[in-house]
Length: 249
Image (cartoon, rainbow, N blue to C red; front, side):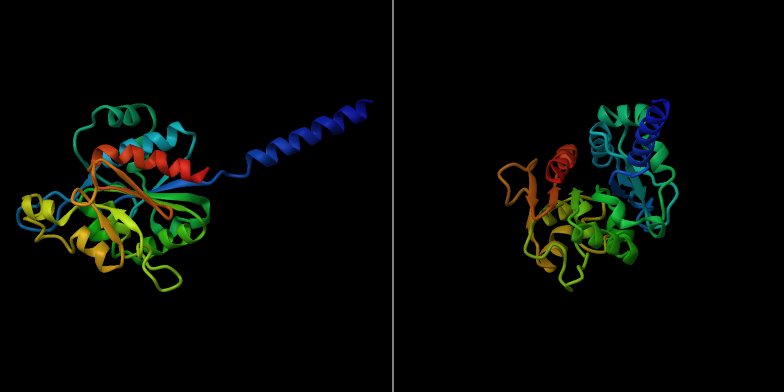
């Protein structure tokens, strides 16, 4: 009898250890290492905190582990003051620990992730949209059934992703992103003249059906099309994360 009990509990322990050592798939947040746009006035190119911290909070609060990756690894910086959810996730959920220690692309194994999220700020247009390693990671996660999310200028970061078929990830899909008209009317990037491309134009160029305040009834709307979840406006970034989780079920 003692032998049976020993075998029973040994088996249970083995199963428990086996289950715990199998990592659940995680979410990957891609951020930019840019600080400014390289012009004489040093226009801000940092990541937009309000388009990254709230989605991070949503993922973590739903039990998902989140990794950060950037083109160069290490610390990534943010603009916008920490308020509301951003303050909470920084204080209680380890947001800055992740943001200060992002992985380099070569340390990322795409099969470990069920989704990728990219927020705005201008930086991703400069160093994520043209980074072959990051573009490949996004493609592999998507082609494995993963979900891609973006907010604001984030859509521009994956607008150039090419799938194994040779077609652009965004081709034939409705994708929300920052509109040309707003870009050209604002001084943030000298009416867009400092940017490598305009998000709306690049999406349409690569076959997407760009969505923004001119095509949507509500500029806060989150657009979902073939496992791409996107919004043009920062207040809806957290909703993008929630819709990604729903699609993942």
